[in-house]
Amino acid sequence: MVMHAGNADGGGSCRADSTGYQPEAMRLMGSGRMRDAQKLLEGALRRFPGDVSLWLNLPAALLSLDGALRADPRNILALLMRAHILEAQGQTRQAARDIQRELAGARA
Image (cartoon, rainbow, N blue to C red; front, side, top):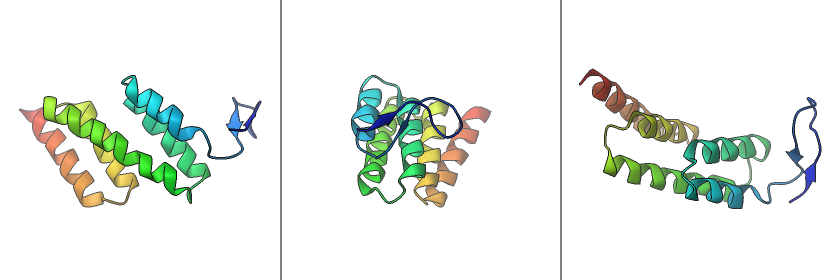
């Protein structure tokens, strides 16, 4: 992984290539930091949209969220995160169903 101090807008560090995003995302998921892993992968995909290996890590996040929803089917955070990932993958109908589930759960 190639790191540079600072980026174009003067903020933190940026990566010159996509190497290293997946291990970091998996570490974050393994420590229960799903939102951070999701944000990391989404940022990497904005910079490297053609990197198939980055796209393939999003299902790992979905699997983790599916497990959380099996434990608590009405967990609003897990439903929202799952819908967001599905939408990013172009699965808008499934994302809409997740949002509807969330709204139905909020009313109950």
